[in-house]
Length: 455
Image 1: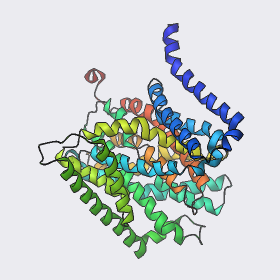
Image 2: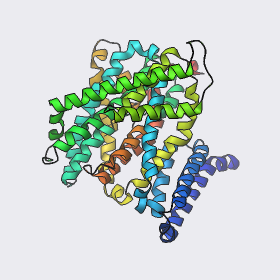
Image 3: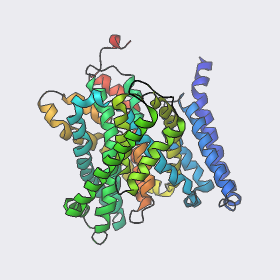
Image 4: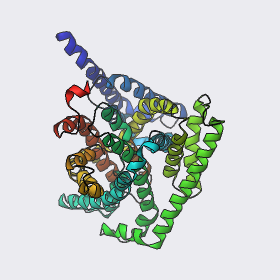
């Protein structure tokens, strides 16, 4: 009995000991380290150390109930005393965020079985498109009310509320998929809707955030006294043209990227060439960058390229490569960077707002948006109230939202410290609460097969 308890607590002890040593080193030796921080070799040392931590925490966290991304976020916090004050020098970290979003969205496209979800296209599209818009507007208003209640009236904070509302509309299929794969549903469409919605919502949420940054926020710099001031420009011609250009160019570049990959990989639809890691890494990055340079949505382009590749199935095996790369390196590293750049003092200061916002977002906004988006299918009896509520619990914020927070922190028109702090609180609580909550509530509300059928 004692031996089993020791084995159960050993990973926690090892992780907390490692985190304490990093924090202790930062508090006591930060001055000596900071004098050499600008040197390239020291930056590489920190980069290599962070990547090694992703490996170590991935091995240990699998033996804990806490998700690996949460441990990585905490590691970013404790790393701040060592290098946090000079994080702006680490341009490679910001570059990593752009690379990560390209690979992740490309992978989301690969793992979305389009042929299997064609009959679910309309409910998934409703969740991913209408749901994102409703969620952005509704949550912006709620965040504004909460901030006003707590006496925060800085005009710069209002911009942050609108942007993080759009960012947090993105969900994380890769985080919730392992949980869903362990469950046996009465209606198999539930799993397909949940994973497909998450993949598409990443793209639509990213696109809405991008259009807001390009159109609405600059127009409203002189008038920040109303949340609605940011959404009114979205109804104008400029926003419509910007949106159309983003979508059309993104679709075109994504389709061309698909054709190029199909040509490079396969001589015909039956013969599969050996996987080449160089192409698997370079293709999504190039597609993403080319679409952005051409004035389109790189987020959409890489997703479309991955989605179309699944049509002939010759690259489905490539997902194994991406799966390991993302889970064991890219995603933990993104959360290390996010934890590194968010000011801990601001995080503590905004804890009441962050925790309250997370609770309202997870247990009110998500269910309400899901119900509104799926109301036609609920009314027709194709989905029950219980199934709709369950789907709302699978729409957790995760790595794409974290990446977008890192990206928008570079915009001067966004109050990055506020945006990061509130966004991190919501992502942190979402990851910590929803992963263990989903299987438990799935059994309670009766969307699973009987236990004897699960074995």
